[in-house]
Length: 134
Image (cartoon, rainbow, N blue to C red; front, side, top):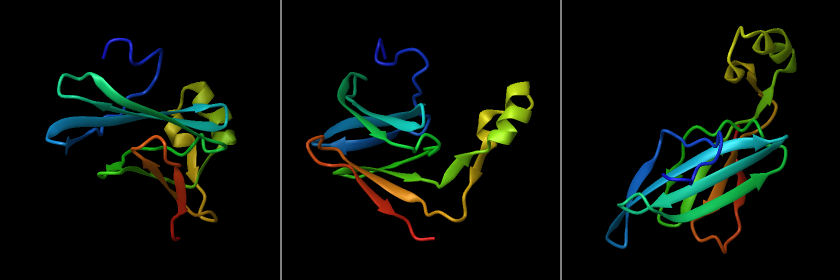
């Protein structure tokens, strides 16, 4: 991928391959956090693995969305953001001491609803967040 990914920028294992105007397109994403905010990058590649499209989406206070997989349609990338929070006590007493990975410090908040993040493939269109039913 050349210099597309910088530093420790993530690249998901769950890519999608779709047909777009008769051409195969590989679509993938990487999500990370900037402080308490989510940074989501979505890439599309042609059959020669050359990038043809990149979108960067930031969402405030969604750093622990834990985006694991996604759906791609003709017009949208769709992600489910779970209502998660970071258990700071577990971070301090286990993660920082090497007793568990950071993913085990994420906790589900049953009082909040999840959110569908609907990202248009057309970057001129607005990203939508749709509240999921409980």
